[in-house]
Amino acid sequence: MLYPSIDKLLNLVDSKYKLVHVASIRSKKMHDSKHYQMAEKDYVNKKELGRALEEVEKGLVKINEK
Image (cartoon, rainbow, N blue to C red; front, side, top):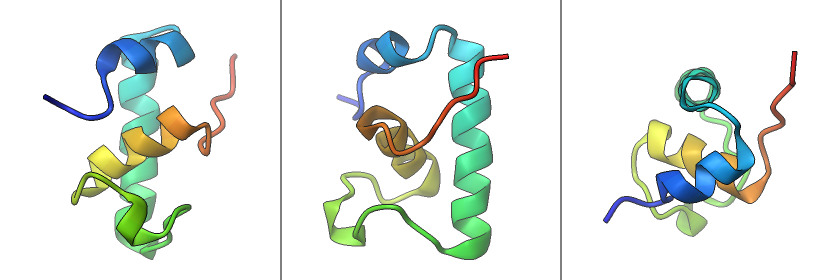
């Protein structure tokens, strides 16, 4: 089972495409700067993309509605 669940994430973000866009931008920033918003031990995922999705689920990533 993947974590976080796509169903939970789509309750927070209105579009799969927006979710992918936000997660990819955040994961690139995490990869480049090595700056994480939670302690590394608190993440379930080991890769930046999964960690970015976890941050979206926790509400740590703000999504601008345009």
